Image (cartoon, rainbow, N blue to C red; front, side, top):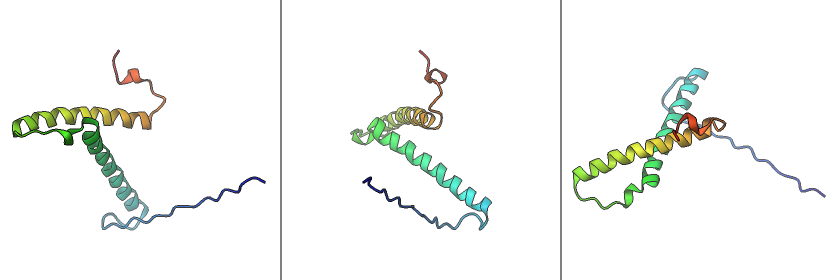
Amino acid sequence: MAARRLQKVLGWLLLTTGGSADAAGAEEVVRYYELRWRIERFFHALKTGTRMEDRKLDRADVLRKCLAFDAITAFRVWGLALLAREKPADAAGAVLEA
């Protein structure tokens, strides 16, 4: 006897003070959350990809230089990961040189 799979539907409700009570307003709010999520993923790449929290820097000028380099690196890594998710069939050569 084959096992019967139960599928549960996930329902969610987004409470917000922004937008209006029509479809266009809902789309706008969802778009803001999508952009917010992209920002969160960038900061995740900045923290984990560069391990910046592990650094022991005691001077502001050194920290500033390090953060500038790390932010550029994290942005590139985040951008490549985003591109790979959104357009997985695209060749890497479109973004990277040999």
